[in-house]
Image (tube, each protein chain N blue to C red):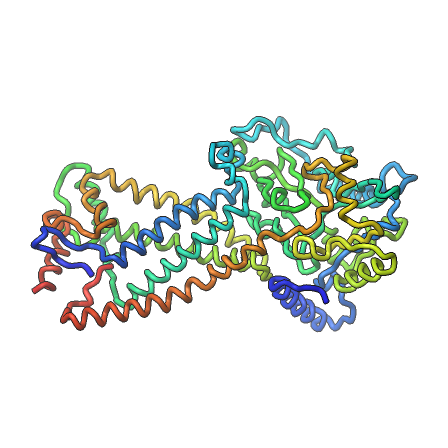
Length: 224
Length: 337
């Protein structure tokens, strides 16, 4: 649970549950992207299989097994995320009216060195990015489940299989873009302050006061 | 009693239901490929003589004649499969009849086993659980209700994964044709994969595949899958022989019957270099396990993960809220996740 840790000069931004689910999703996505590209098939074509230690990537059944194992983790973690935070009504990442314009203002301020508008726990662009990532993962999970059902021997309509496959491939491209953009956000020095919280959960109190003043006021009210 | 896998049970149940519905709707008494009923071919190796008096076995000639209009016409010059050098081009070897190629979807192997000459017509087995169709990255290989496994040449990118996962290396690639030419021909794709489609169009009309019709020896029999399986088993019993294709890769729609064991045939095919381990010239390996089937446990895990997550997350959320309430935290459930 998020809370002010004033004696430490910190704020607990992400509790252990959130951090575990985040890393389960992140790591499973890395494995899914790697094993998924192995299924495309591109590793033999692009001679990845010739690299020392990577000969096994030519075996579609090894990469398929990896894909399934990682999919179990991703599906579990994603459903957990939705159900857990849905019940708790944790809605900080749900986009709000005006988020697009605010994102533009934040980016403009970052580029020009100007004053950013005050933010809640999440920046407006983080809320928008969340929708992109969550939507893409939802498409990947739904189409992946259809593909899994097909591979288990169930006879499905040809069109459903075809379009699920195309959407799954498109989703894979979008998630790679999303991951690159997500990691790319840490090029911005201000965002680096948030990086540690995905490991130990905490961010500096002064940083929160400065950049997430709306959230800070809420936390203060709650701690009274 | 024939061993039936869980996935075969699913498919047969669905297929039987669908076929039954079609037959009832049409009020027809016959149950054949036209009604989407699973069909199969029995290939009796005691009867096939490879059409010894012909330049080309008649089944092969019929296949050629039937499918010639569908053979690839590559656009040349063909680009290399960058960053690799080279590409797969069979267009100047259209006359090859001793192997499968994009221009030859059926060929007859000749091998001597224990002093007997055995002729074996070879083409796609039309697996019950086709690994090629399950794993096609573009979803363009269909397993039809009539048992045929068909590649859509308009959607195929020619990555050749289907060939790599086929236990018999059947689909063959031709570069310089297909969808990849319209996208990024240098970077991705490699052409189109070609193979026997069990004359799916003829079967839909209630006809036999061209090779079956053309066989002068009656070595090939085509019909309802369960009847063909029974026929193969009966014929095998009659000659004290063997059946190949009923259980390989989880079962197929092609049943070979032979008076000599398929282990001996497979060994002889290799020893006499009729097969060379390359795609398009497969042996008759025994104990071919379906490798996708072996991953069913993990696939089931994917389907069960949402259920497990809903229960676990529901319990965790309840505990978390209760704990906050007990701690006197009456905030606005304050979470922002």
